[in-house]
Figure 1 (cartoon, each protein chain N blue to C red):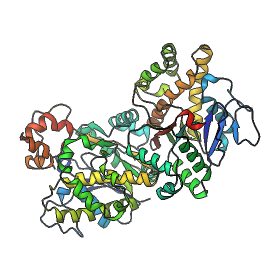
Figure 2: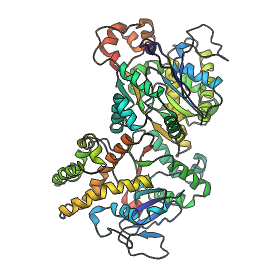
Figure 3: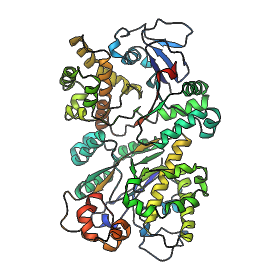
Figure 4: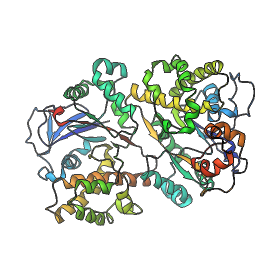
Length: 311
Length: 278
C-alpha cells in the first residue's frame, strides 16, 4: 500500500524551528511564495492557498499512491500508531495524548505546546518497519481519516469568508464532476471537518479534487476579487459536502476520525509571537478587521486561544 | 470470513430473520425446529437469569458458539444497526423508506439514534436484509472486518449520572462495582479506575466485535457481574444488563491504550417504536 501525507509547512510552524526530516510516508510541503501568475496548470499553488496548494500539487503530481493525506505541520493529525511500551517510555507526553483521545474521542482538536508538537513529530521520525506496517494496515481499513466535524455555522471566523461566496461557488460546483450527483440540500450543511486535513483513498481524492479545482478556477474568473483566504474555507466546506454525499451514496463508507493537535500558548500571551504578520492576520481573520480592533490586541485576548492563523 | 449478527429477543418475535448475516435469537424459548430462531435452552446458558437482559444471549454465544465466527454482533429486536450495503439508486428504487433513514443519518453527524415509528420501515429493513445477495453480503463483511469493534454512538452524559437516573435505588451497587473493578482485569489497568465513571458509554449492549476481542470482553465482565449477583441476589430487575452497558466503554478505552492500530467505529442505532416491530 503506497501512502503519502503532505504536511504543509506554514510560517507558524517554520518559526518554531527544528523542522522534522521525514522519510517515506510523511512529506514536508513548502509551497512557493505568493506570485501574480495564477496559471497553475503544472506548478504548485501559491503559499496563500495554504494547505490547498498541497492538494493541487498532489492532484497534478502524486499519481501512484493508494492513499493521499494533507495536514498543516503546525496543526497535524494525531496519528497514534507507535507500540505501547515504546511510546510510554520514550514519549510520555504522547502517551498522555493517547489516553486523552481514548477518553475524549469525540474532540476535533487537542491543544498542545510547541514542545509536545516536536515530541509528536519525533514519534513519526522514529517509525520503524513494524510501525509503518501497522499504520498502513490502519489506514487501508478506512476510506478516509479526517477530524471530527466542527459547527461552521456557529463560527464567525468562517462565516465572514463563506457568507459572501458560498452560494455563488456552489452554483458553479453543482455543474462540475462528482458534485453534479450531490442533492442540492447537501450543500447547506452546518457541520464539516475543519482545516483541510485528511487522508483519503486516492480515487476518492481525485474525484473530489478534480471537481473542486475545476469549480474553483471557474469561480476565480467570475469573482476575481475573491479574498485569497476564502479558498481554504470553500474547500473545507466542500469536503464536508462531499463526505456527507459519500456516506449517503454508500452507507458502508468507512470514516475514521482523529483530532488535530493545535499548538497554543499555555497561558494568555503578553506579546504576539515572533513573526506575527499583522496584514496576514487581518486578511485571514476578516471578522477582526471588520470589527476595527487591532490584530495584536485580538490575538492576545482571543486569537491565541482560538488558534487563529496569520499565514 | 464468518460474521453473524444476532437480533436479541426475550419473546418470540413476529418478524424472524435467519440469513448468512442475521439471526433471530430468543433467550429462554423452547427450541422450535424449522422456526429459524436460535434459542439458548441448550448448552451452557443463563437463560433463566432475566436480570442479565441481553447479556444472556451474549453469554450463550460466548460459551457455546463463538468458535464458529470471526465476528459476532448483537442488536435488539427493536434497536438495529443500520447495515445497508445497497447503492443509493438501488436503495431508492427498492426500499424508498430506507433512503429517508440514510439521509437522516448523514444529516446529523452527532445523532446517536434515529427514531422510527412506522412498521412499514421495520418490515422494509427485514426485507432488505433477507434479500441480500452474495456481493452485498461480501460488502457487509468487508465493512465489518474494517473494524475491531463497532458499537452504538454514546449519549453524551456522564456514565455515573446515567446509571443513577436508571437506578435511583441502586447506588450501593455502583459503589460496589467500582470496588470490584479496581482489582479486575482489564479495568484495573486503567490508570485511574474512576476515570471511566466520568467518561462515556455506548449503551444498549449493542456491538459487532472481532471474536478474539469478544471473548476477552466476556472474560472480563462476567466474573464481575456474576460475583456481584451472588453478593446481591435481590438487586433490581435488569440491573446487570444495565451495568454491563456501562462497562463496554471502559473495555474499549483499555484496548485503545494497550493496542495501537485497533479500529473502533461508533454508529447511530435505529430505534423503532414497540408497535412498529409487532
